[in-house]
Length: 409
Image (cartoon, rainbow, N blue to C red; front, side, top):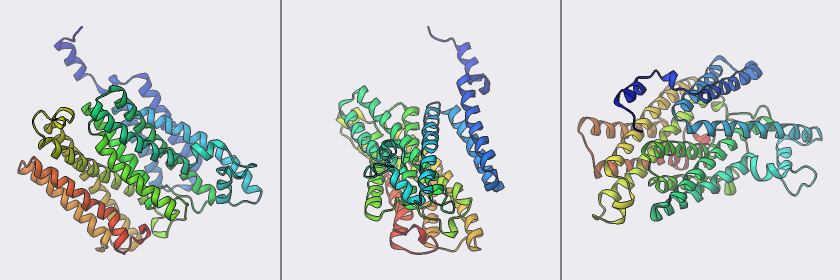
C-alpha cells in the first residue's frame, strides 16, 4: 500500500527526536556510559582539553550512529571485542611482568606459539594488535577482488560479500588500533599514546577512514560499482603498510617524541586523514568518471558504471567534505605548532605542501562553484590532486626534512 501525500508530509516534518527508536536511545546510553566510565577511571590523567575530546568524541559517535544506522553495529562490535581483548590481555601481561618479563617481552610471549607456557591462540591469531591489522589487510585485498568480480558478473551475492568483507576489515583495523593503544601503556606507561603517531599507525587510520566514507557513499547512492576502484587505493595503502611492517619493523611500539606529546595530536591527525580519505575517494571516482564519460555507447562501461551526473556529485561532495576537514586540520596544526615550536607557521616542507594541497582543492571548488566547470577537466584535476596530496602525505617524509622529521621512513 502506498503512502498518501499527507502521510509523507507528516513523516518529513516529524521532529527528529521522535524518529528515533529505542535502539537509538540504548546506543546513545551505551556510548555516553562508556565515556563516563573512561572519565571516571582516568580523569586524573586528563587535562581539560582531553576531557573535552573524550566527551566530544562520544557525542559525535552518537550523532553518527543516529544519522547512519549501519555504523552503530560497527562501533558496538569494535567496543565489545576491544574491551574483551583488554580484559583478557591485561591480567596475562601483568602476570608475565611479575615473572620478570618486560612489557614488550610479555606481549611477545603471549602472541608466540613457540612459547608453549605463555602463548594464547586467540591473541596470536585474532586480537593482538598486529594480528587484527593482518586480518584487516587480508580482508581489504579480498574485498577489492570481490568488488571487481561483482562489477563484471553483476551478482547480488558477490556484492553483499564484498560489502561485508569491507565492514569486517574496517572493524578489525579499529580493533587493532584500540588494542595497540592499550598495549602501548602495558609496555611502559610512559610509552602510552593514542595510535596515530607514526606512518604505520596513520596508514591503518587512512585505510579505515577511507573505507568508512566509501561505505557511506555506497549506502547513500545505492551502488557498489565504485567499490573496486576505491578499495584499490586502500589496498595500495595496505601493501605499503605490510612492507613497512616486515621490512622496517614499524609495528614495534615506540615512545613519542616530545613534539607529539600533546592533546593536539588527538584531533589534528584524525581531521587530517578524513581529508586525505575524501581526496583519495574523489580521485578514484574521477578515474571512473573518465572511463564512463569516454566509454563507447552501449559498451560494458556504460552498462556497469554509474551515470556521470552521480559520479560528478560524489566527486564534488568528497572534495567539499575533505576540504572542510583539511582546513580544520591545518588550523589545528598551526595552533599545535605555536605551542610546540613557538610559531604558528615556519614554512617547514610539510606545512608548505599542506598549503599547496589546500590551495589546489580550494581552486577546484572555486572553479566548480563559480565557473560551473564539469566533465573531464575536473575529473583529471581530482586525479592529479591525489598525487599532490600523496606527496604532501608521504613524499615529504621520504625526500625532504624539517620539523616533521619524526615521520621519516
